[in-house]
Image (tube, rainbow, N blue to C red; front, top):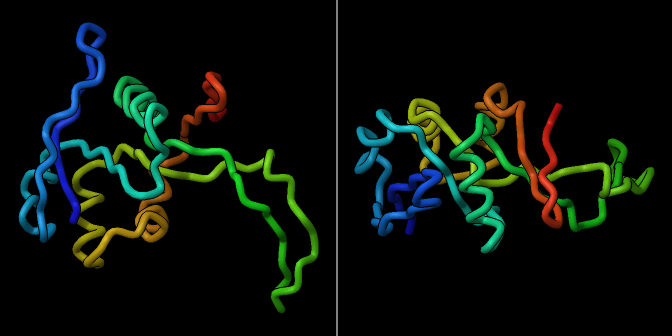
Length: 144
């Protein structure tokens, strides 16, 4: 079941997460979402402790999306499905949550969809996610 809660960051307190509350229908929280900036965390998000670092950094910066290293093999295929080359995964990043989203974009997404799908959401809102932040072995990499 999906949950919602409050998240805050300050230099004095660091990252503060509230208790999560379950909701069964987006309409239950639509009015709340429309008045707030939302941080979406789903199954694509990284595990702790990197998740907390990602949340803290997305809250205190202008970045709207995080990325992760690609761990699977990448292949370029032609229109028939034949593998034509192997790509170097070091040259690619996978978009992931957490993401910062305005409530209006979340509401618009759920007006057309009954369940969360990160790829569908990004296709509808790709103009909002040109700047990103990613973490790799204690280094912060930024888009230019």
